[in-house]
Length: 296
Image (cartoon, rainbow, N blue to C red; front, top):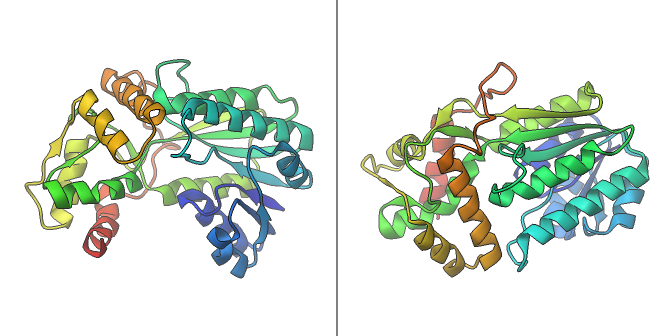
């Protein structure tokens, strides 16, 4: 049995589908059964509960071959870092209590940093918790910036005719990855179970890109070849995030994250290699972006 958390999300749903296609038994975890009905219809077993409920998750993991674990986004919490740490504590304790032998965890570029990484610090904390569990074989996937994050900028483009949001300098190049590539890599490793002890794997996407370069490709895909990337000031970006409904806590962590990218600290451990480069290019993603743009 494979246990998949975040099963309604970009990576978890694809992982669950691909494991089912490989004729594996799969249990998908969600707080809302409606969000995973598609997977249930395909043959997955539902497990409805909260990832901070250690007893619920411990029982679920006890008989599992392997699990895919992540800390889901929570835009309602007033203290995002506490939410990350509390969820990491609950997940790690459930793993330890259950005795499960193999775990793949979604992490991020920058998880090597011990401070000043904003929203990534909770993933560093989660990795460290897993690393300390005896007899556990764990793999942390340190993924780059999700290309799918650009979907959130569609209304900015439509309303302001600019591309912007994060206060990240336009010429800073870093890994941008399609979430399908993350999921496919996770499935490969979960089927092989070829890792022992604690491991991490960088996944940087098809090539390093700056926001300026990505914007040019996305702009061309929607008939706006002159679309500019506009780097907001930290204060304007923070105010914009709060105005869009993010908590002050989360907005502040995104600003810290952006500063860490601009300084180079967050991406200093992100080097291309045979194992870290994935296949989907920004040009391929732009086709999906154009469809979403037209339909929004």
